[in-house]
Length: 174
Image (cartoon, rainbow, N blue to C red; front, side, top):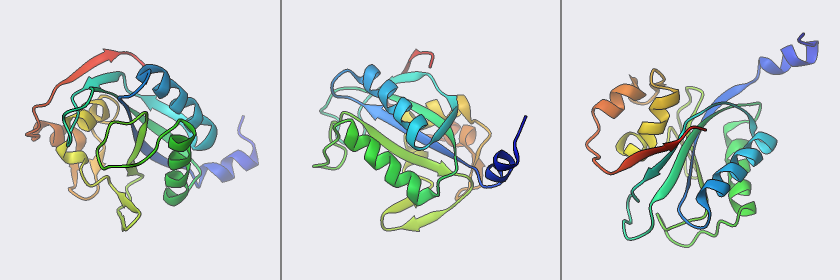
């Protein structure tokens, strides 16, 4: 039974889609740890894709990634969600040196509700999601009909129109 407090909170809940990726260390364990921390710090995971072994993108001379997409229900704002995922990355050992480098963990905000945010430190929808097979394949597993607010087209249509032919191999159920 919902309490008055729960009903009040539900009026201010948001849905955020997060992409998790790792290609250093024990990536499977790192993703599991990240998911636990997301549940503690960001909100409830309501949908989770399988994990996918994916070819690196951008800088290709590095190990393959393990990627996964989570849909999370949160009471946090988009900016607080960003702060939370950056903290989780730090707790798990992420050190930022170069763009698109190999990393123990990377957590990107793909969508936050139907918001469009274009600020120096926060861009939602993720500005490259429509170009990346490693994003669109797991995203389509859990949200094929979600409409990209900038392009006004579904994730499944974005995937169907994609030119990226890189390797994305389903590894396991969540």
